[in-house]
Length: 375
Image 1 (cartoon, one colour):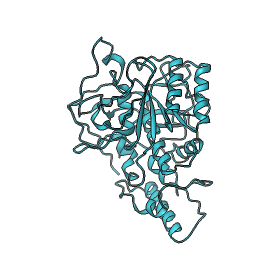
Image 2: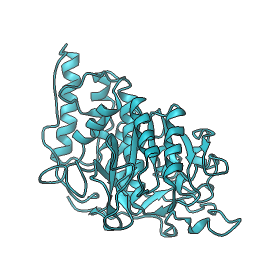
Image 3: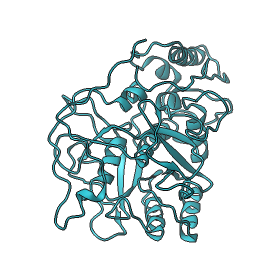
Image 4: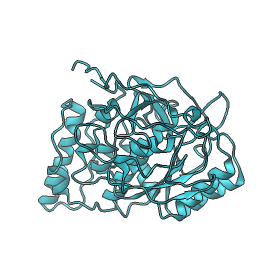
């Protein structure tokens, strides 16, 4: 199949969500006015809308970052008051970084644009731990994780890079694990030989960045990645305005994994956090060779497979029937043999239940290997 060019509205300016926007006193990220019409490459690749008839990720997600703007049009009504540990109001965002991350997770669909979050029914709990996304204190990060856990969030998405370990950070991660809260953090660091925290800690989903053509060169890795996700040439939202911005950053990959976990946690409400991680790993789009791969872990997260694949040993029941799972999904544009096999497996799952089968164990017929993201 020929590659399709990924085209984004040419009037968009490449805006990386860095503190440069907010460093000048009294200045914040300006309103975004230009709307991106074509479907962004990351959304094309992940195709989350194919499982939206079953799940839209209607769970609470804490976004630990620079805050999240409650005034962003596609997040109106989705952003809670949140918690601020850096000074200010959590549901505002002068830097724009946390709002961009939250939009990748939970932006509601709007007419006349193809952009939407991966989990467009998620509730966002903003947790501000810094006003500068390039700088965060480990103590503030630890407090932010605790605040996210205490908020009742089922997923904590960390959008900042931290290279300093601390007992407080370890304790915050342990608290999350004890409360069955999934912590998702960037595996990226800014300099070689640094370690990424809390991504390097047990029980944390460490996310590596990829671009349209594979692993990125924009960030070193300070932890063995669990999975990977898009992080370059991303379309997203700003704190205000109905338009979009373009951004790249290795930490932004966290959004796609957190949102995929939200889809799973709504579809399988009784599935423990550790089993959600196993599901994300088992259904990821794997690279050739041994896993975990040093650059992408178990592969690129696949929200459709994570929701629809039946795994050996799976005991938690989905919230939808297998008939729903097999029949509710819209047809896919990509009709390659591997993806077609996955849908064939889903159809078999539905047929098994309709026929009275109660203990079928089904996995995808063939594991996909690494390929360019857009065809």
